[in-house]
Image 1 (tube, rainbow, N blue to C red):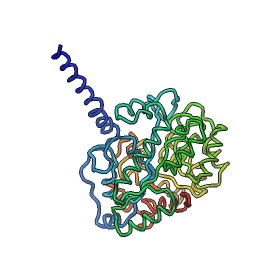
Image 2 (image 1 turned 45 degrees about the vertical axis):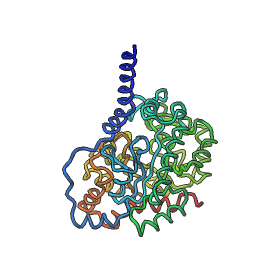
Image 3 (image 1 turned 120 degrees about the horizontal axis):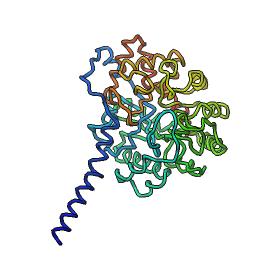
Image 4 (image 1 turned 30 degrees about the horizontal axis):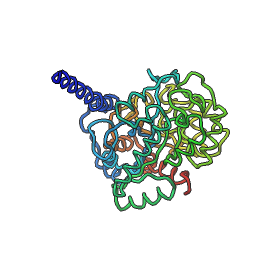
Length: 388
């Protein structure tokens, strides 16, 4: 009997190691791939320019994955060492809290959730297994712990003053890196306006209204209703604006985008997208809506994956950025990689210099490259984060 019990215990340990140890890393590796490539050729001119940049990116889902963000990992797209190697000064970290089964760009319902099993196999706290709000809170606290243990070289900015102070420090130490917290969708509110207050207190400063399904706030670009804002959605938008948090319309239905434009006068963000006139895909909202967001002082983050660029090579991403400049004006164009958002990329965060090189080769001026690679995003947050 003892032998049988010992064998059974050994089998359980082996299964646990496989499920909780090997499986999360494999999922991360497979779902956040980087296309194999030889080292990119980068000109001397581009290298010198890139070394002087303050790169900023509007969307990474790194917090979804339980890799150590403080060390250079061999999977996924981002961690703090790779961000620093890419000369990133500011990174927006998004909290993904629910995704539907068989996720697609055309039509998804809210009656399934892929994040619950991921939370279990990655050993998130028990309350995250049943509460979307708890997942967002867990992601925020996880990032805050990284900042607390960083000896001051990683700062989560909550106010314009925090960001300005961190950038001043970075002028003397390029290891200084700033993070800003965002939600990917408003479903962590769980239909309760008080949870917006709670997420503000946890450190969130940018709020996506929808993700891949219609939620309590209104229609998703990938849902089934194509609806605008609900009554709760309008109340939530008002509360978000009252807190001075920034609204991200990246996955919102066209009707939601129009209604938010109608009911607010604050600059807005579309954090990770492509340009419909350049790459005709449902994921990219019509050019006239993009232009209206820009006209109102917003910024548009260009993604790095094929579904929004129609060409995910560095040259293809550069071409999408140039198309965005042509449509919106250079001052409204930014980076919105969607790194670690279950995309395949052709370069990771340590390889940003290749994008600088391809933009330079495509004829973009150094000033314009500096703007889209980071300065537009930095300016936007210096102007639109809460004052303090």
